[in-house]
Image (cartoon, rainbow over all chains, first blue to last red):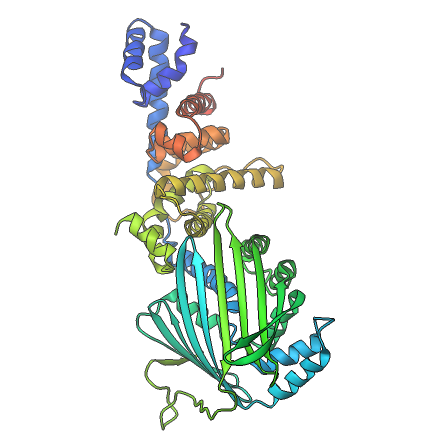
Length: 331
Length: 178
């Protein structure tokens, strides 16, 4: 073997990376070869030079700024996914939007007009919802109860895993309360997910496509029309991207995330409307997110509406002096 | 806390748990980038990107992770992408060693000469070889670990290290000219 052919072995020998047998072979050769001894000396010098780079200038602490970006990214992705899930959509808005859009051509328009007229006059109602989310094979069940009083008062109580929190919205004021054990994850969902604006609601319903009549069903003792539509994920992606700030440092990441999720998601929304009173009784979302490793995450969200026009009071969480009650904050 | 526990917490939605990972690896990852790019500010930016990607990756994967090797794999990919982008965007010779902005005494007289020469020479070594040199000599990884990080064979690592050293010898001021 020529000395030149040994260079790779000599290099590994200098690094202490040769197995025993090869090491002995190299040492035997070295004993009688001055050229290879010189090469080895060169390698040892390179080693000494490069290891001197282990000493580096003090690096800045980037933990705070990194975690801030990560939390921001996390909150936005949670918000994005929890929005449809936490869509405690006021029925009045739902029906107004449905009437305006009339997305189902063959569905009798008269029914929608009646439904709209009926629900527009609603003074109050309660909602109850359940969210079942399966991610990486693990299932989380989240429940919420909500109340609405015309024209702009909402109260929601949420249970996500072991976390509980409440939100009260009166006009443009959002009050929130969290239990001590509420996780940041759940908290983000509330802060960003509640309440949906009229624009959000319109936007969500505007995404429905292929709306079809399903066989009538009874919901909570009431015979209901049943409608089903698919969410157009391409349009969802376009609309969601349009809401992003292109100067945000995470803009490209967000766009990529949205496109990935849109391509991987199928979503269906069902709506049930009372045949006698034309009130929306139930809305159900079913999302399937197909992961690249072959797994499927699912999100099923059902919201029921009841106690129409029952007396409900929603007041801000303030004491007699107008100060926030303990644990509450104004967002 | 064990790394596996931290990863479980992050997967369960506890974002703050990830701070422990950033705390532990921020210095070595920044140092790694600094030695690969020679750019102090770029090292910070790339390290931050690496942690963001790692966070997202942890949520997407189910597998048990060898966190250290995995972080270095993400970091290496980022460094290579940065290098390609820089080469694409600029026909000007690479600005190999921006040490002037380093807030340290390292810039000072006695150390500047040889260390700058070493860093500058290293910056001229082809990327794949340079990556192996830095992982081995600066970060202290064994060939086998480097193979795992880069997803190549141990033999390939041995070749790249040897060729990288030869190139370094050739390029170092006063080195051989073969």
